[in-house]
Image (cartoon, rainbow, N blue to C red):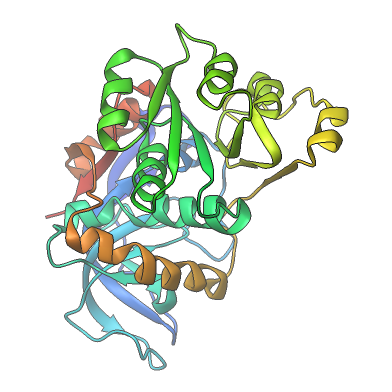
Length: 327
């Protein structure tokens, strides 16, 4: 099969097309003929040698989400049959013509979506549900602040939370991105290059603060995050683009009874990811089917253009998802 491999840790140019055998699959897994694969920031980190996949996952083929057709099923698979159109969260190997996935980590492709659109869903939607609703425990009537609202995670978080009735604020780096995020459902998008998000959140909430913050920045954003949280607020970390180390006012954490938490998803087991999948199927897939939530695809690349796809991801100039098409 055709696959995009990481020839060595380094710049986007280390991504090359190669021939690889079709992946094997276990009793509880399906083999998917990949039509499209999403491109995500963890793929960039893996390419740079900073985010290695689990030991039991193919090491040189990145890719955490795919969409396509089931062509083979393991002996114990009960949820899927050959010919089913699915999208799946995987721990690696997605940049290839075929990819294996645990049956619990697959979801049906909504009838109104293309494979390209469906491939943009799993990594971001699983991440948002797990961190905003499970770890962050965003409840009815509560408010959410999403940093990096124009990327794949941010776009998903804005759409999901606003569709479920929450007031969502976000930070982005341009006025164009502000307009796009507000069109997606954000009540207010804050241009962090021209505005102080802590001051804006204080004004927007009449000094109360927000209930949950989804942060992928870390570092020097942390003190302002702590100040921007309401009483009993929750700060959920999913990346640290500005660094792992931060100054935390522990007194404020105690007085406001704050929770600081975070997670990574890749290494979690299939049962954990399967529970997220079922929550998405119940609460979010009907919103995709109705058009209340729509995938936002910024650009589609061919496999031989994978390096350009990573360059675009690194530029952070995109709004929405970047996808590789294998069709």
